View (tube, chains in turn orange, purple):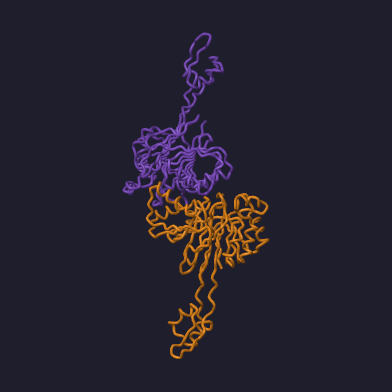
Length: 306
Length: 306
């Protein structure tokens, strides 16, 4: 059984409040961690959750507004002080590299580990990372400055061997991996072929998580995130303040819900709430009118991606 | 009665822990605030203490190690979002300006208020700020990168009029301000002179606060901070780890105490503790062996400067 979840570390937009932190999320795929955005204080949030920094090998930064990246330098520095030697991959707008370099240079810091910087493509969806379990692609968003979201997508999983049938038919053990990959089985002596679907069940479904912050309402992303398991979409404002999205390039809760609906998402997590709203249920209720399966992405909540 | 105090917002060195924050202190002189260093999360610490950001007009940054300035950009951004229009003075190493500019530039942010940047002089003590109440001077420190401390010094206060004597001798009211300044009084008709010391008492003592972090043991600062009311001096290590100060350019608790003793300080606050020490009383006790009036500069403690 795959573990695939996201832990919300920050739900605030722009500035932290006494109870809410700037953007950061920790995606956990079978205990492999992926940090998405890294607002000020993220290293402290990770500590509170007892996340070992050295198990983090990939950090994704959506854009260069401070509430999405100002915690990165402190985290890099702490990893260095903790004796990290394994390289660390950072994915983000190209200017982020310059910002990191200038800070390290003036502090006369030479990290004990290497930073591998991957520039994000803001023009079109691009695979940023691929390993045995997942691909992570950039999602071009429409914000005031260059910005991408990130789509985490499990690869198609192995088919599940029907042990009972395999034993009954006397399929040898060496053939099992091929069966998992979908191959039919051919008895070498008789040449008799047993169809794969007789010997296996369908694999567990592959799940996906799309992180879309910050962005104005942008239907162009729907094609890429179609049928996503869980969509995180920013919902900075209520519809009553919709005029604000014009200048700020953010979304309303209703707009987030519309994207979820049109993408056929199973669940919508909203976040990046403006500090002007004391009662966040206003945002939740507005979204639910359009897309029932919506939840507030509040600090310290973990959502299973399924 | 003057209010002059310092609130400790962070006592950690290098990295925050679950209970301790990176360097930041808030000096309060008659409700005028001066922020000294601004480690990651400082804006959240200020909020916890209900400090109105808009009452902050002067921020002093000692040096460009992340634990002393990485909270600055978030704070500047929040001030902007809160609608600040009054200019803000920042005092620090010249490269800090470049770091601020590059971050603002890539976030396409134009602050609604002006930043007035004052480069600190790391070669010799230099007055950075002077107003009716105080002067603030840089204290050249000896760290791995350019670094200054800051000396807050109250100006000589007005002498205190001896009302009883003034009334008895029939000194006119118009003369009182001059008496406070130390002038003698001369009766215009008779030409008779009354000495100031007959008509006034000595003023309240002028107090001073020296912030010295980060630095290795450096006796050159003693002349500048001689007779300081309260000395904050970093005490990153214990003597048993003294070999670490050679490469890190930090001080031991004993060394901090020696500076306090030789400076004839009234009180020593130690801080910037290495995370390696679970029991900070080890540092306190080591310092107290040399300088009895030592306290731990822990988070949320306020010390009167007197």
